[in-house]
Length: 409
Image (cartoon, rainbow, N blue to C red; front, side):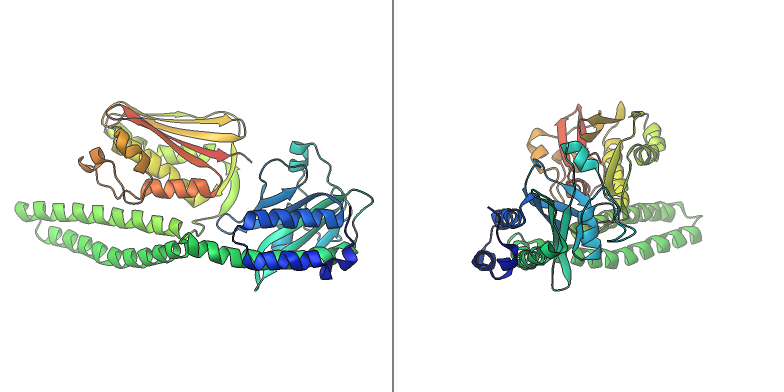
């Protein structure tokens, strides 16, 4: 039974929803209830509430009532209706998504890919931003009225519910950030960034001073030998400082570079090739197995460089003989990147801790290879931020394989 949308703004159901939003801690069930209310009120085939993911500049479906069985993620840009709503931060009505959209905005484009996946035909659409205190928190979207078509008049009740949803999201996120210590993690990341910058300047200065002294004392072999050691230690310190700085940037959840859709094959090939000379100097074979088919992903481009450099450099550093192999392949709707080596491996008891900050395997710490233990933690954070995962299999003295899973777009 459809609700009377003209009375929805002052409906007791809306006040009940408001009361729950003030005290509700678990936001998921509440959003699902809100989506069901929107669907019933507007007699829609589908009602979706999207949440903004600022760290990936995407919208993710948090509640869907209708014919979608999986989570939807769409970029916040103008080639999807929900994305355009988030960019423009305004409500709109579209009588036919496949038709002329210039009446809403000449730049607006409709992405048909989800229709093709779900064998669905999007017709009339309503979208309203969920904004509160000058910030967009989500988008509420309804698709296809069961009888007839939506109209501009239907925007008013949708906007009313969207405002309540924005209010609840704002307070729920504040609660979640405090409860999960996300806010503290961000502050810690900012502090670490300041700290490593303060360390970087004197370390770089000490290295330059050692180089200058070495030039002045080039005829004194004993002094030059000591200065060589000082320069080596300063290089190690600067490398550690840079690792911690990169991890602090990831921990702050700030984009490291441009977030876009691109073919994974080329940056992987280029990133791996930068370590070929280092591998060959140790007598290692560096193997790349790259498919001919395109493998498009949506990722942070600078972040991907960090993922590749960490996995490949670790494989080369901890392998004394044999090979380092990179295998890239498609697995249904995912792309898999496997980085394998024949190196020292990881003790079984250390494997569950390998992605913890500042943790290094016991055999790695006893080796001559320097490290900070922050690289894999950063890789895991970045990959999971974009809907992927990081897996590890390893045997001590035999080798390791790190597998990165990322969704294809």
